Amino acid sequence: MGSGGSAGRGAQLAAAEGPDGVEQRLEVRGRQVPAELWAQQGLRKLYLSDAGLREVPDELAELQHLRTLALDGNELMEVPEAVCDLPHLAHLYLGRNGLQGLPPSFAQLQRLRCLWIEGNFLAHFPRALLQLPELRSLQLGDNRLCRLPAALPRMAGLQGLWLYGNRFQEFPPVLLRMDHIRVLDLDRNRIASFPDLTGLASLCLLSYDHNPVRQPPCVGDEVQLVGDGAQEYMEARQERLQSLQRQEEEEGTEATPVSPEDGPEDGEGEFAALRGSPEET
Image (cartoon, helix red, strand yellow):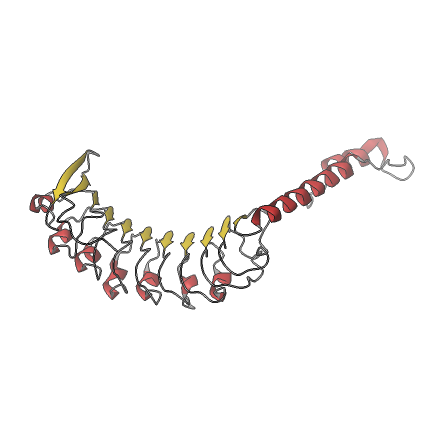
C-alpha cells in the first residue's frame, strides 16, 4: 500500500507513451493527475506508479487505445470503474494498494493478458478473473488467499500463477487440473505436503520455498525447482538421467548379428534393422 501523502515527497512523475513510441514525463502534484493528460486520447501506455493516488478521474476511460496501465504503489481502496472501460487493455498493474476485491465489471477487460495485483488484501479469489480468456500471467502474491475456486481450469490460457505469501494450509487440489500452467509460485505459505505433480505436463518452474515440507515435490524431469532441498533433488535427478542416457547409448552400439540362413536374402534383414519399423521411428 502506498505511503502517507505526496506532500513532503514533492511532485511524482508520471510517464506516458503515444502511438509513435515517444515517452513523455508529467508531474503529479497533490495526488492530482495533470488534466492535459486526458486530452491525449491516442496514448498506448500510462504509468502512474507510487503517485499517492487515492482515486483516478473518470476521464481515464477516454483513453480507449490504452494497452498498458500501471497504478501500483498507490492508495486505491477499490478499482476505479474507468479502468474497466478500457477495451484494449492488455497489461494492468494494481499491486501494493488497499484492494479487497475486484468489481464485476472487471470481466469487461476481455483482452487482458497480464495482471499484477500483489500486495493487497484479497481474501477471496476474484470471480471476475474466471471470465478473462486471454489472461496469461496472474500475480496474486502477498494477499490473504486460502483457497482457489473449483472453476479455475476455466482459465485455459493461464500460464503463470504467483501465489506466494498467502495463507494456503494445503496444496490447492484444483491446481492438479491446470495442465497448461508453466510457472507456479507457492513460496511462503503453510503447505506441509505436496501431491505428485508429474501430471502437470507443461510445468517448467515450481517454487515451494518457505513451506513446512520435508522433501521436494515430485515433478517431471524438466521442471526447475526452487525450495529447501531442491538443489540436491535436481542434482540427483540429473545424475539419474545421465546414467539412463549412457545406458541407452551403450545398448544402441550393440548389434545382434543376423544368421544368413535365418534372415532374408541379399542383406534385407540388416537394412530393415537399421532403418527401424514405422512404429519405432
